[in-house]
Image (cartoon, rainbow, N blue to C red; front, side, top):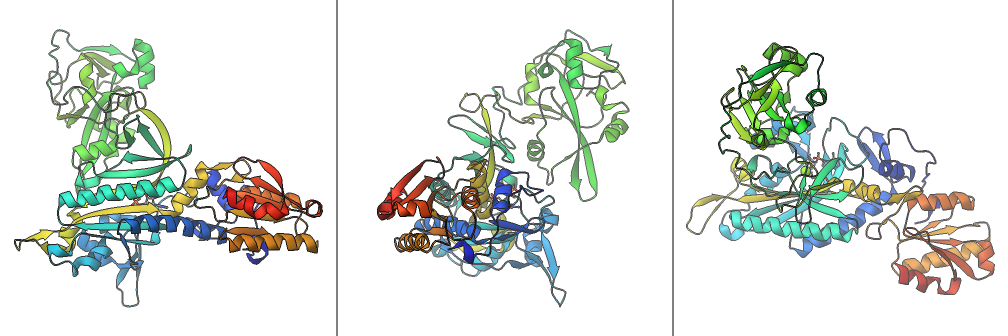
Length: 571
Ligand code: ATP
Ligand code: MG
């Protein structure tokens, strides 16, 4: 590809509304162009990076006998009614009607369509197992599309679906896919981590995410040498059984004390000279029970901890995540300012974080404005509806291997999930086993965000001058800067090298624009292809070209005659 053929322009300035370096660099380099919020055109370089990554994905999936198909993007919403997901997906679904009034959505994922596709092909146990995949545009009407391709409304995804006879076989398929993902992301040559993730309504621990590590990643990951989890779901490994009885502290009686002017847990901690982890705070939530009723509940946890709504949702088996009550709602419920609330005298269910068992007596709000109360004992002074792991794990906690958890940030680029018979039962995918009994097929689903991965690679790998592409998905391996395009001899040298590199199968880009060398150098750094060759009139007379390695900036003059061999040894 020659620059003059692309119709492309780069941008000098960092565009507005690009909060991440990767978003800014991809926009400045003409890799992507925003059409409207969350929707992008992929330029010629981006398309090449996409194809390279897609090839890696295809090669690794095909190696493990997964078979490629292509499903429609347009899906009848009645399939979503059948699977029961229409309301769960809600506003994310981009819906539309055709001329007869039939309702459709643009596919955000394809469990429903693939179920429809395989249903009639599976009759007997002999028809299983198999695994299908596709690479296709997905549509999600994200509330806040941002960070370029990271959270887009239209993006490319590889989605795969496995179909197995039973749980054991399905778990093998899951493990196989985990190893495929390891192979795919290893080939990028960018650090990544596999972490435990939300396993949704199915339960169990068969859900893993793959994250590319990046300082500005959306997710916080907690890890030790042998364990890693997304902070959202990371369990707190507490040595005592959550259900064991409280130690009998009966001697001291509750005692109120004035805390006038104290509004926060930090102020209370300073006032009492007690660290926040020795204080107990109360959090009020509203949980949806069914379509027209909600229930308020309260949670107690240490003052230094943060309530994890995912854990609450899971523990209480809620369909939707609970909501925090506003200060006004709390006041209405308890009759006092939120800062003075406590568990004693409340008439709603009260849950406690398991680690409160380490405190002999609690200090809590007194449910009386400007007062707190000490020597509070659960079960003696208020009823406890349940105890569990309700807080976010944090760096410094112990992991399951007893090592201290550390933290880093990551970008979720892949997600694998064991589905069991969640969809097969609803979408009616059954087979007859050897005894002639009808059995639901066990499924798994496996996604990779193709476009998100490419931006995540850029987010991990760039410097102040531009992108530093790993060879694995670099749009081009070699970037020739033709420095004096008006000089015919120099142009010939550049064109010859360009052609011989292509003949050797090396993806080469030629900047043949009528631009000053400085402009070309800046653009070459911005585009960030691994190897640059400067060909100028002055060097050409000496029979030399200049070779520059993008990641290290190392440069050397090489005789024109041996450039081809030199490049072949570098790429
Ligand atoms: P997130 O938690 O980031 O919203 P998700 O868990 O809903 O993502 P999945 O349904 O697991 O996403 O989709 C599979 C993969 O598709 C994700 O791992 C991610 O790489 C990619 N992906 C999901 N949503 C988007 C989006 N809005 N823009 C770009 N890529 C996305
Ligand atoms: Mg996910």
